[in-house]
Amino acid sequence: MKRLYRSRKEKYIAGVCGGIAEYFDIDPIIPRLIFVLLLLGEGSGLLIYIILWLVVQEEPEKEVVKKKNIVKKKEAKKKE
Image 1 (tube, rainbow, N blue to C red):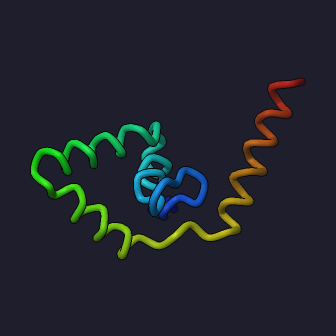
Image 2 (cartoon, rainbow, N blue to C red):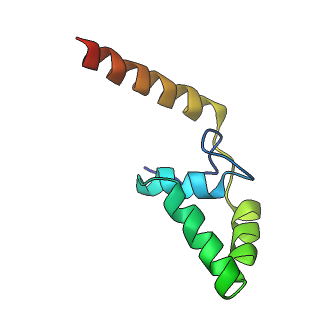
């Protein structure tokens, strides 16, 4: 089952946008732009980001290692 975590890899402040991007399998720039637009438009982007920062758990270390291994395997297959 897929879970939402704060990303350790795609991280600028707390990894919230990177985690959302990994969860939905999209480019991390998309959630970042949405938060910036919400921040500039209504000001709610900052509040939402802080709430997600507090509520969403950071990605476990073993998940990061597992993802790195998957990427290495994919790269090895491409070389073959």
